[in-house]
Image (cartoon, rainbow, N blue to C red; front, side, top):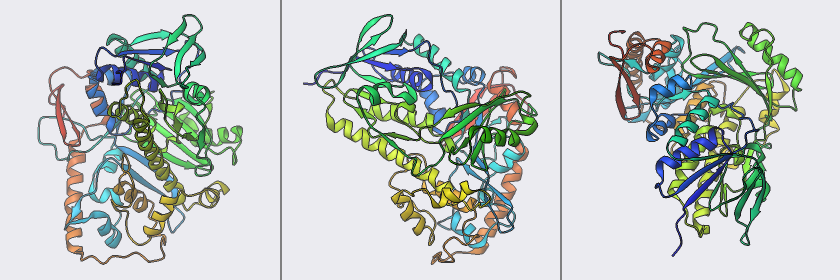
Length: 535
């Protein structure tokens, strides 16, 4: 009979290491020892500051206090990603669209996207045709509300913006309180046993540290999985051309107006992100070194920011290696975070992939024999997740239509298209994305793909040359009535909701202890005690 795992060693701190340590310490039996070893001399990259809708549930599962989280991590609410300037319309004007955390409704038993494709929505875009999120964003509001009367908004998913360095610090404190053994030391060498498993770490100060099961959170260097175990790295450079980023922190222009969404603005040779926290904005430029030098990219980025950037501000340049290790789990070592792979942060997937990797690790938790069947299944699932994210990021570039810089032309014509995505792009000339088109939907469902195609207005711009098939019986009156009711609902919702900043003050515990903030996430609804009568 195989012996059970009795200890886990995590190498590397930061968000990946401390999320792994705290999550596993919370979920695993107390008899399993969890140890985290991190160097006192290696800084955290700390760029990934936006999350996806699984994060609120993950924090609740770990028993983290909401008020402490919002206050310590300067967190804010994220309704989705707003894309600006990625495409142009018939007049050559830039298009904006949103990828929201909400599923479009059914009308007469059919998805709303088909009605929008057939009949349009006047001056409203696809997302605005059925939900109020863009209107809330433009009014500096968010989906949460202070309670007291019936909320007109349906239950929707939301995520967080957060300070990644402070988040890692909070997780470290909680993890240590719950029993994670924390060792500050450098790993000088890795000892392998006769099976090729990691047997021990040679620490600079403490000497030999025996290993039973190890998690590699050492970042881009991949100190264990890639260097010690020799697992090859598979580059995505043939599919995604961006390989550099520069990051900067800037103040809010008006602290009373905090957008409840991440934004991605296309520039000449890539795109600029903006992640609004409670106290500041994290921003940066993801670009291709084939099309811009660092100096050129810096000048372009700073011109984009204009007077938003403090005088003398200098962005930090970060090389990006886009791709993943061939396998995430080899022998007795699992890689999480940057040590296992990285895809440009267009859809804020970095922390999500750590979270999912941990959940799947619990599902396929090994014994000391580390059977290959368990490892293979875990690796198949992680492989599928990376392919799903890669394909969705590629979609944004392949459906672009900018011609003002060689970068955008090359993104469509010089980069490879993943096989499944290439098949789907041909299929979607004839019909909208459907649930059977995607091999997995860990994060991006077929309606998420619909939101991109319809948001970019590709059919209006001639995608498929009129080959779209619509054999269904659709009633335009049903659609017009739906639009009328949706517009009325949007007006009521925007009128009801309060300012995003006010909600954040309440969530931080800075408006008093006696009333209600209603938070809606999927089918979960909970009330928190906060100040009454503000709305």
